[in-house]
Image (cartoon, rainbow, N blue to C red; front, side, top):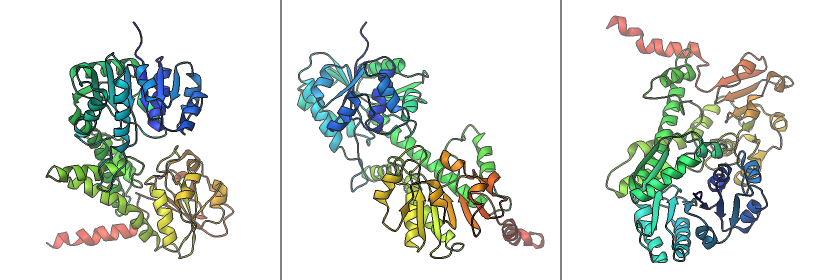
Length: 460
């Protein structure tokens, strides 16, 4: 029996990783992209974008994968087509379908020339109703065929994190399939059973339920992150407060779990921030509200400003502040909605001399930051003249900071550690004022506040 053949429309971080991952599992895959350089890189055995392990996996599977500019070539030589194109936020906060519509139009035209049954799977994040009512009509119009009879259609998003896309794609917690009919859904479930490495459970449902599940999962995770950040703020205000002790205990409860419950900075990246906004938009269109999602977004966006207000009381105006971490998370060059980037800009606006460093995202950050913020080429150069150091991501490069990095400082340095990883090295260092976000550093003051709050209970 011939193995299923795949095509991937859109070779960005996710699409290229799916291309490599599926090929690595022994299947033939054709990638499609509108950028000639992307196609050329893949066909020469190179990754078209930066992602952990992507270069090596593409190189190792050249006999089973290739790329093309032609939708026809890809569709006519495959059985299942994944569409993985951008769905950027529009001025309303909704997800634009302009790139998806173009891809569906081209796939539909290719389907018109194909006699065999073909399954199309949309992977891009969209709002409920987009696939059935916005994109399916394009397929049927351009192909002259009928969905469910001549071709299949599913909505099946991935739940991945940049920096570990290939691993996350091949080892998901579960697979989600929104199906036009059971025939299409059953085929994709069988495909996942062959592709995935960890035999995950699969949940099949209507297309609209799957579309809502994807955005609901993301907004729930951001709510959990924001909750942990709230607990971190409270822990700083009680004697002996320690957010890690509190959240570790909370995580033992099976109703809560430990993942995404580490109080630190807010979330960022190309997905999480916009998903709350989009869910709020969708709720209003449907005549209801999503106050929780909207509040989560508001609280998250307020964090950099609150940090700057707090630091202004302990940092002199004009001080040199080093921001370590400009990507929105470790092990990626993506700076979209990065809290470290927002902090660097806000500190500069507040009159600080800001220097910054990121192991991967330096070039991307330079194009986003104003000239007042200097992006250093190395960690040592960034630290050289810093009076205050903000560690905004738990990047491995920053976890290696030690006492020796601050021994030759002429004056005491304040280190604000948002992830609380450097306490063993720096907490007792005579030349460092170590401030771990989410822990009490003013026990006497915090105790006095609680004593004042409850001290008169005996007289009542």
